[in-house]
Image (cartoon, rainbow, N blue to C red; front, side, top):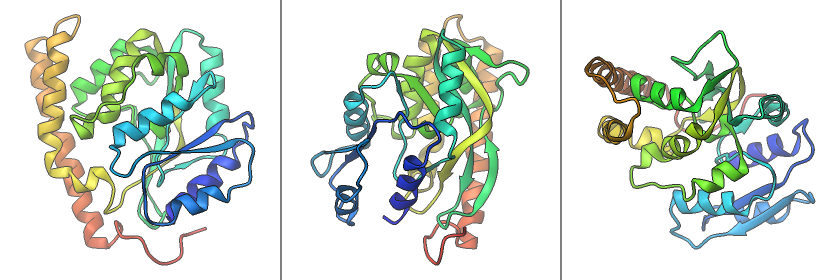
Length: 273
């Protein structure tokens, strides 16, 4: 709360109506449960998890409760564009061999103001609608960052996602990428170079709070990728991946420093229309 209210509104007003909306509430004490309980919509169900449940545990519970053919995971402070589900359902319908549809997303601050538009998919082909999942994950390795983006930008085929469960947060900043790595190589990935929603950066977001650990955790993921990559990683690719890791981390840290100085990471005031 209060970001949860904006998320719910963005979900209930999707142009694609055939939805099953599952909220997994992980023991919050800010009134979220009371708010969720008063939602009057037959598409909505709420499951509860014990207080102290990890992010991975909460994400896994929500994933396993899903019964539809396609699944999107979205965190409580993010937003979806009104036609997000409709567009990505079209993507996966048009490309039956794809196991994931991914898209760009906007970055907004704690007050809901747009900081960056249409971010994501860096290094992926701009002249084609799909890419092999193996190539997408290798691009993440080479770029030294999660070019796919947060789960709000992804629509999975449910069977493929459930086959990769559970979500794992031993390496917290790689929580989403670790699951993408398990799902994407099963098939193709649809690429949409338009924004389907907004990821919110704030003083409570993991990316801000744990920025100082970004280099170490990205390096850990890259080293694990190197051990299993096929074809094997070449020395030049390893150098490129190292450079990408430090470039992305330093860019992110600089951006957070600017946002903190501007007060953009703190909620407050009236959100923009």
